[in-house]
Image 1: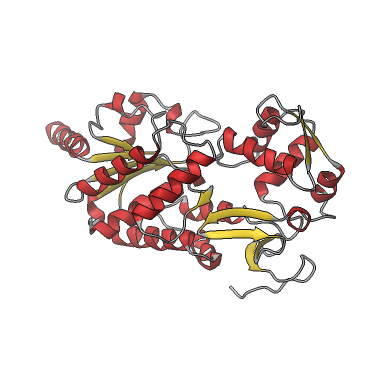
Image 2: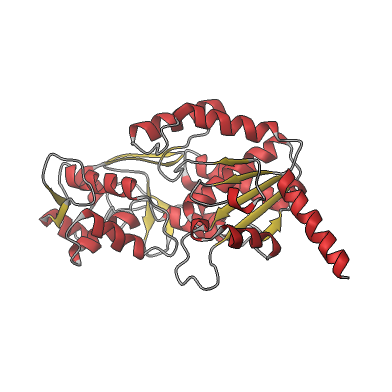
Length: 351
């Protein structure tokens, strides 16, 4: 029995090393495990900026333009990185894949993009292994695979974290990717309600994504409200506000640079919600912040951020633009509704 178990472990390691491994970034020491001699990284903050229903080549151009313009291309790789990763993923279509990801929104969107592409290539589900965790023994607030040593990572394939996907999981990922990229958010609720045993964090991630739509209460996304609440609660600079807001997240997913960009939008709006000092400089960790009178009114729910300042933001394939955006997150029913007129005159769509 010992020899057989050892043989199975050896065969398991051999299968892993022959596969193409895909992960969310190089903060995770997968090279140190010895399991991933072929490894690509999927670096894209898909929860920010446009992700419309277009062909992969056009989507690549759109994402590169957004990341460069938002100063979110951390590795200054641009078009080359996207082209290399896309080509490598496609060239392996006759082989196996191992995906190493986490439970947060950032990773879950990457997972469904990759799985949707693999399904489009005709890769059978049984050749795709997902290693995805949202917690780890002994770590009270697990943030991601980057917290684990190479030895701890190497042990994960021997646990329940390793899942060989089924056709149903590929189908769910494909439908979720299509719903995310659609020009209307009608399909997000069904994905948020799904309880897949294989893609077990996807529903939670889509629920969190939905809460980035402006609220019927105040026109704020959940992230914006948490930042304003942090400042109201005593955070005196942007760095502290970001840390306090991130601490409220069940699974933090937003990077600090994009968080500071969001704070700057609220500070530079026609009716500012934040006073940022020194004025005239980009918001950074040391920028002093305080609520403006308008910010206090919006946070109290007696004024509406979108009606005051308008909005121009993409969430997947949906562009929210102007002072009368057609979709809102309804705090009472906890779902996205179709909105017409002002926040005091909403017409909802049925589930």
